[in-house]
Every structure is written in structure tokens, then in C-alpha cells.
Image (tube, rainbow over all chains, first blue to last red; front, side, top):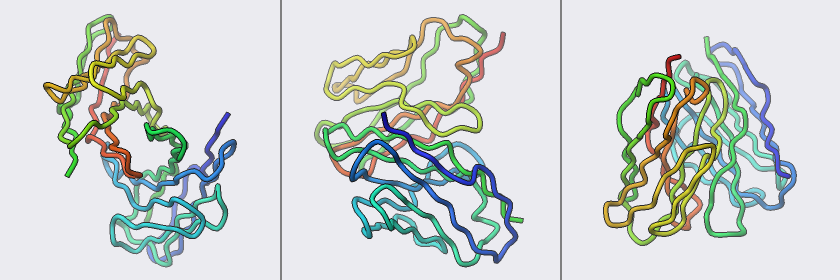
Length: 114
Length: 111
């Protein structure tokens, strides 16, 4: 069966510090990968998605970036964090096979920028 | 573009009450429809789905029917439990890589 991991689970970082959040998927090949953010409430904001190694699409211009160095690894980064980057970051995957495109989410990373 | 509208929350119910969370959508063609649930401090989990008109998705006592004529996918449960307290998201996909999510509806169930 497929599983998705995110780490760290929680992170407290000062303004201006760098960021690296990691997501890995097991049990599937060539997944579509996604980074979302939930800030101060319930709504989901899509930040990046990737349909293959090295292929990254950005949905929202900001000081974050994403990379996909391996098929099942997705990394979210920042060179200098802002207070507004605080939130709950979720990684998700969906399969290319099939047409229904349901998503499977990781447990999330709670980021607090101080 | 595509959109999903959910009822504003929070929805507050007593245990064993009947639940309805409304969801309507705007999309061309024939989207697939989903309900996800997010328990406090966790990621989203797929709750149920329906891929064509008149399909009924069901799971864990929850049901939703894909109504093309009213562009709706309302979530229902006959008897809620305290453990159902969570945020519920309605979503659609139309064959692209990017799903469209509603803003979520918080459900609070009191004993």
C-alpha cells in the first residue's frame, strides 16, 4: 500500500531563517506531487505541483520554492522566512493511472515563524 | 473557472443528530466529486467520491449523491458521533492535475 511521509512534524523558525520541508511517498511510481498551505483557518492554498522529476509548477508567487530531486521526493524551501509563512503545510500525491485524481495527504508540518 | 461552494460553519450538532453539509459546484463537463475529512492536527483523508451523475459515494456512514441537475454533492450522515468532529472539504477534479477545493466546513458534535 502507499504511504506518504512529511518531516518535520513541527518547526519553529525565526524570521529570515531558511526552510526545508521534505515529503516522500512510498509504494507508487511517478506520482503527481503537491504542496499546500493552510493558514489561520481551514482553507487550502495550492503552492506547487509536480508531474515528474525536475518539473515544478508554481501556483502562487512568493518567497517559497519547491524541488523534486527524485521520483517520490518533494521538497519545499525558502531562503528567508517571513512571518506570513507560518501555517500548516501539507504534501499530497495523486496517481497518473485512472481518471479520478483523488489526492492522498501527508500528516502535515506545523510551521511557526517567530 | 471551476469553483466549489460549501456552507459556512461551524455546524454544531448533538450526538445522534442528522447531518447535512451542503456543497455546490461550477464546472464544465463532467467533474469527479469528492469529500475529504480533516481531523484536528492531521492531514486530509479521502472520505468518499463519485465520478458520474447519480452516483452515490458512501463510507463510514456518510453518503453523498452526485446531482448533475442541481450541480450539488451534499454530504449526509444519519447519526453523528463526537468522533465525527472535524473539518469537511468538498472538492472536484476535471481530468487535470489540479483539484478545486471548497473552503471547508467545521463540524462540532456535542455529547
